[in-house]
Image 1 (cartoon, one colour):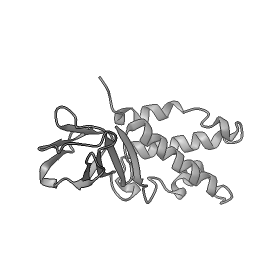
Image 2: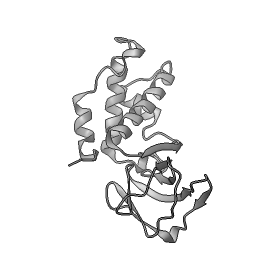
Image 3: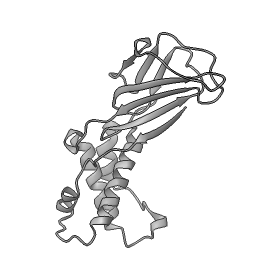
Length: 189
């Protein structure tokens, strides 16, 4: 099972102005650094929580059908299934009709159940599920705790920017960061 982002988010959950207000900065000399820290913090929050904060597109590649016919989609929240492509043993691609599967977005992870499962498949990555995930198009759609986690993380990394070299980053995580994202982490049994 391989998960690949195919379209990155068009915006960040927090703006440069919000970060500068949080840090109480008025100059523009470090705007490029701050923009990079915002992007890195968003990516870290997404990695730690298994979420897509701003709408983005993903591809899930599978080698074989799951035995129960239900595919878990480990990126939350799933907005829609864009396409399901199955590759035959000779590499020929065919799209599965949307009437042949059902998406459960209430579960986490989301589940995609297939009524029919075409065979034979190529040995590796014979099934590709393209989907979109995210809370919305703008930062106002993202839960406030996750936005606050990004601000705390950016502030922490900004504070330690000169103490350690680029190869040593990220130096650490502030204790508040784990508390802010704890509710949004996917729990495994």
